[in-house]
Image (cartoon, rainbow, N blue to C red; front, side):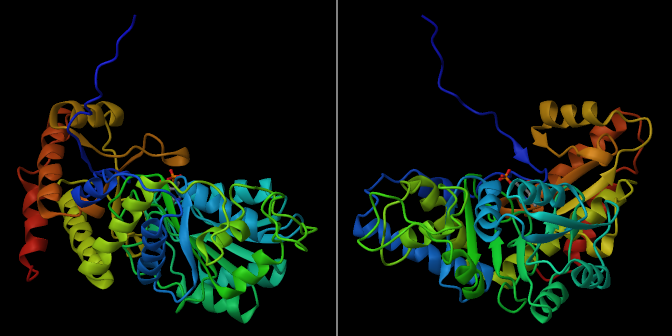
Length: 409
Ligand SMILES: Cc1ncc(COP(=O)(O)O)c(C=O)c1O
């Protein structure tokens, strides 16, 4: 009989665009014993989690909870619940994850319109307003930070435009939340979904979400409670949401006072999500963003100090990830492999038009730390040298230390 040994994952420092090493506090929280899904301690933990994520999203929305599944599950839940077949949905596309929104909206049978810019840029609000006036969408769906390009789309102005033209606004903040300023209510964002495995310092597998009262109204109009759970007199809605698992109307009854049974909440992921938010609330949301800004700036200075060229419009770069052009003559995958095998450090490759052209280096969540930044720069220098890119000795570390030296922390 084949036997399988205990899986002991190798020691890695995850400095790619996510996932990153989880905060040990989150791992400890996940190892707590399971309890029943309607145990008062469990429902209290669910309520705590809702309150904590209201702080993280900067919202008063009652409808703030978790979708079980990775960040993509949150996106699907938001879009399938908001979009009715035939609705016009406008999607600014500035990287891979804009294409993902388009793909999911198409599967919801939306009439999808896009406004696209080349990878490495963000979309000008004037272009978005022109597209709103031309297409008259019900929903505008956008990514905030697109890890595929490292760009962070400014959203305050987009929110103002959507409100002015009575368009619902959805934002995917999976890669940006906690590392870049985000304010759901102040920016008039009606639906927001995230993931734990980037700046929130957790594992993938739970998607914190929030919906404004406007979005909840649109969603609950389509509410259709499953047979077997329906109360007398309740009927199925004519335009039922086309997913059972991601039916936000039913999920609201599970997370709300009615506690109507839906799925079995992923208990260990609930513990993880709760702890991720607790860390941010304890440290302070603004302070967490500032930590990402500082370490992101140190990494940016460091890669430049190694003589590497930074990809894209740096004024709109996310704090938590930087794209660097792979120097001519260096085999990008080989160098990444050496970083992993010899130093235990992972950095990211790229997709689509950027494949083989840039590496992506993250400084996020638990790994937005001085030692993680300096270790990565030291190892990268050695690997670059051995691949024929003769960087200035210690140039990366010097530049990063200069950033740290010029701040009080
Ligand atoms: C902006 C963005 N959206 C969505 C996703 C998908 O997340 P997941 O792999 O957790 O489903 C990612 C993952 O990298 C992302 O960066």
